[in-house]
Image 1 (spheres, one colour):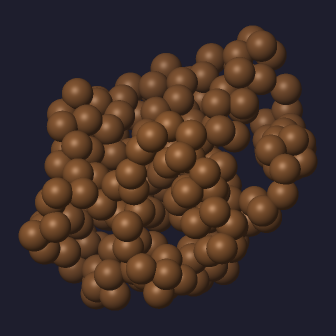
Image 2 (tube, rainbow, N blue to C red):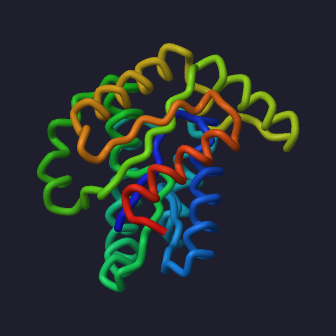
Length: 207
């Protein structure tokens, strides 16, 4: 089974992925977790280019192609072999992120990606969308940066309008792909969100 975790920045998806991975492993299931971009050695190099706040001159089409290069490498090297071994794959962001961030946020027409998508991109069995308000997202990012003495990456530094479009794109994707998408309100506590994720996964695969 292939499960993806989506949402705007600081939605809590990465934390919930780690919680779920631990629970599934304790239940004796064969599970791996990975991420996009950066799930492979080559992907990590691509990730560093994409997120480096100094790369302000990057044009949008370059950004899309770098994400797709990372994704195809990741699918061929990590995801497909794991699924062939009947492992459960948990992925922190996937192709929907490109549709939301570059298609929605950047307002790009990505219809030209369809052939590449049809030939190389797997459709997840389940997508958990952690929906958070823009205000809560920014609040959490600020808290994280203070706690870890960090700065926003290149994408996290985008405008509120950008993230509003990203969030709306996720809403549209959720409606369009209702058979695999589950919307999870993510403004609540870590514990309440974890409980909801557990219930969803239990209903889906049982453990």
